[in-house]
Image (cartoon, rainbow, N blue to C red; front, side, top):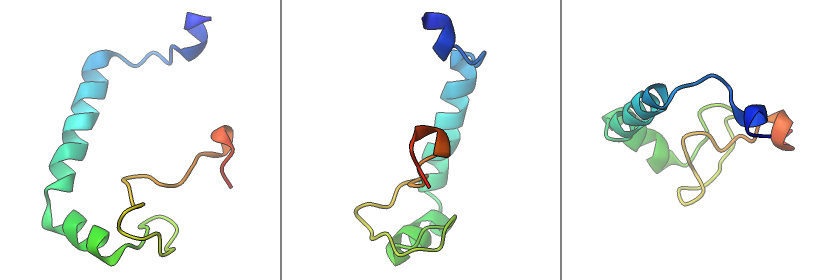
Length: 64
């Protein structure tokens, strides 16, 4: 069952992606986007509290 969740992505890659996301959150662009409370992907008003880097749920996880 462990092989089912193994996508071939190593821990170093995941750490690098998380580091990029942390750096992005500190940029002026991200601060302006979150202040508006609008999703960059779908354009909907999500609200400041619920807005995350990727609030859109993938179809494989029950999204629309």
